[in-house]
Length: 251
Image 1 (tube, helix red, strand yellow):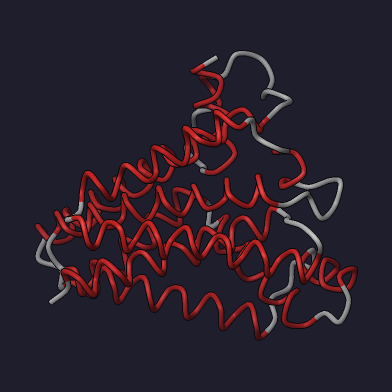
Image 2 (image 1 turned 180 degrees about the vertical axis):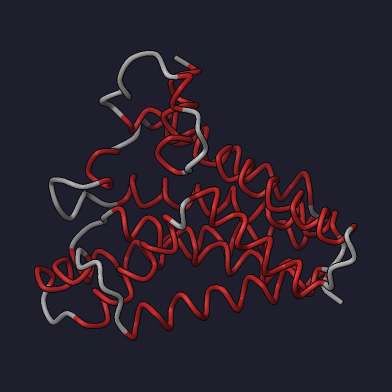
């Protein structure tokens, strides 16, 4: 059961080739694997931190190393969350009714709202990583941001119903209370372990606070969540958490 949850979460949220280790088909109840979401964030963040360290050792300047670091994390996830951010921005910004908003979100073409949202998210994260500079600080910040970002998705799954009855968001479903609590607990523990108390509390409050804001906004816009909204929430939280850590420790 533990292995099945781990594999399901990594298959859902990354492009890492873990499917070969799965026994049979993916579990039909994906809600049971939500507690692993923060561990996925830990893995993606750690891989990004490792890439930054290698670039730093190779003599790359911080801004260049930061850009390649973000590119590496996007490669690991298949830019799944960035795609959700762009679709959500286009839908929420361009549609007049919930039905029209969801229709736009399903359109593979990107509009001005989506392009601007992607551009801003990339600038914020690259700038924050470059400002942190030191590889150890970058590693800690990326791990914390990745874990809190994925835990924000759990908040939406608990607080909202699916806006449509198909798609990735609907396939996850409502997680069990103890699994959701375990996932949130793992994410909250990360900043408390890796950061001084005041920045740690700030990342927890602001990061998870963003998930509540996104949840209420999504409810008002389309009456629930979709897979795109979950991805958008993750990117927004990453941006906020990296901004907080860069402000606290950046040079």
